[in-house]
Image 1 (tube, rainbow, N blue to C red):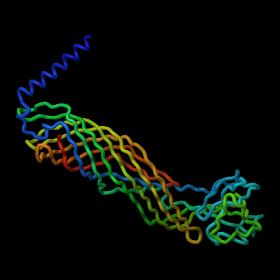
Image 2 (cartoon, one colour; image 1 turned 135 degrees about the vertical axis):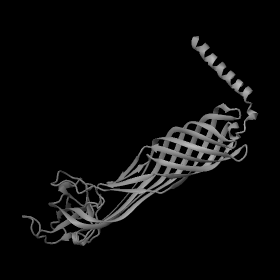
Image 3 (spheres, rainbow, N blue to C red; image 1 turned 90 degrees about the vertical axis):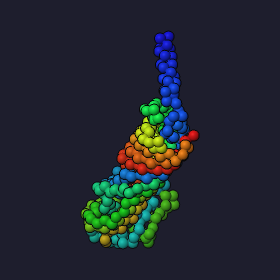
Length: 363
């Protein structure tokens, strides 16, 4: 009962205070045109700065275990040795392939005894020239748009003919993302070389690729020898992160009159960024006389990211309904990561500065 009486007293005081303010300062006496209106909607162009992406590389070596621990899929830069439909019965498989006839040696004198002089098929896995480095991409400016709705929840007089507004602001924004990085590279490359005994089987001419289900020439499913060496290499890498960012924020604002037709709004809020992106990469590594690796990967991802924003908007009234506005905002959002085949794109959204401008309609 006491709480009911207390809230009732507060309500009467607020109503009485507003009536008294209107009696002292009638609405008609106000000169600030935009502050007379309660609801507003605006459509603005936005110009976004500070969005960046870090690209990293950690090459996945798919050559598998050595010595053999059981059937497994083995992927190389110049071929593959995989598990066939039989499960690699007899530790052999027909699900294998290679790229270059030079990988086959009819009498390999480099093999250790007792296999010296036997025929062999060599497969290679090369590291990336981009391994261990962080490459970056930062667009100078990313354009977009913002749709905003403002609801004035309260007013108070700060002078005889000046009032301030408080309310809630809801915004929806969109921008098209396109982060790119490309470079020619040179340096040391670590190469893993696995040699397989072909026995009496003469490999089909390259390029050759066996199938999972159809029988074909058999190859041991594990190498007889493995060597790891470092060679001089050259190559290139190209990373690209594309997609769209959608932002939604809601929060309070306070609007202060600066002139008869000019007002300043300060506010902030919380919300979400929906990231819908596709990350692709292409890479070439050339080790002369050993292997040429051509790799590519693609992955699409989408995710909701928490965000916070602080903003300031300046309004200039054109008439009682329309105004022109320009704003500045700082937004923080969580980072966003996409990975495929050892390559990673890490989108950084922790320091977005936005300038926006457009028309505002009050009703």
